[in-house]
Image 1 (cartoon, rainbow, N blue to C red):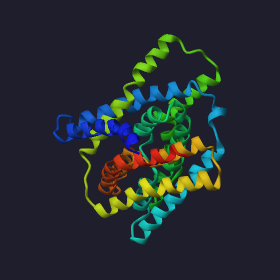
Image 2 (cartoon, rainbow, N blue to C red; image 1 turned 180 degrees about the vertical axis):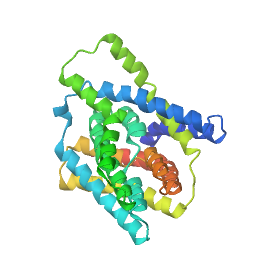
Image 3 (tube, rainbow, N blue to C red; image 1 turned 90 degrees about the vertical axis):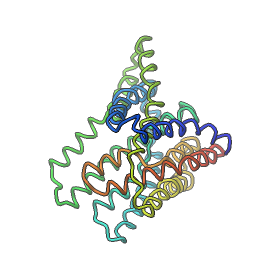
Image 4 (spheres, rainbow, N blue to C red; image 1 turned 180 degrees about the horizontal axis):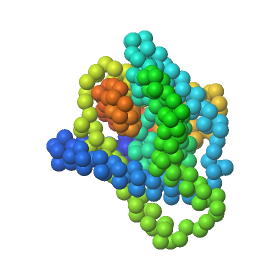
Length: 308
């Protein structure tokens, strides 16, 4: 595990650097927002497109993998939502706590980290997970929040679909597979452009994660610890059982799924919580705690899956 920890440490060191820049106000919240936008819309999109443009969708799309991941994540989602209801929380609050329990930082942290630590072949399974997260759980939280407020309507459902179609990660995935399906050659200048732009994704995303954490609150520590436990331990455990014991997913793909499931809570959960004004401080604390704890747990999980 020590060797894996040393390999993951530079990633978290860049996050810590961003956190320090944010805490000292050297990097303002406005600067962080623009850096995040650059990574989200340009650098990470270029990286995803470059990966998917070299893959054939029939070689990536594994329904056994999708069902195994969806079954495990749905189970954890329901557990977190049930615990929230037991505490007397509203449907909307429960939906966001459940979201914290299953939505990891797959885009900003998972793709660059797993591609470098496990290998480029790890990207295909991660893209499948990312797609499920964005389409299924990203839509579900919006639907549940609007149901709780009595605002669910065809217009809301239409906005959910539009949000999915306009998400740059989804767009990059679709365009990449369209390019590969058409078997179009990649010009050298295009390849170099994507490589150059995509290279900014890893350091930019990690720094942006850290800088954004600087503005996060540590309120509701007990709830944040529970949600961190659900995300860093319960979801990877459920995924391991589902992928290895129930659905018999390919060992390598199962290992990537388990490792990616151990990632900390994603920042976009906070953005949604803030937008809908539903428990943003609670979500903020869950992101902060889970990211800090994951410095150790992610390395331990990757070390374990390498033995599979």
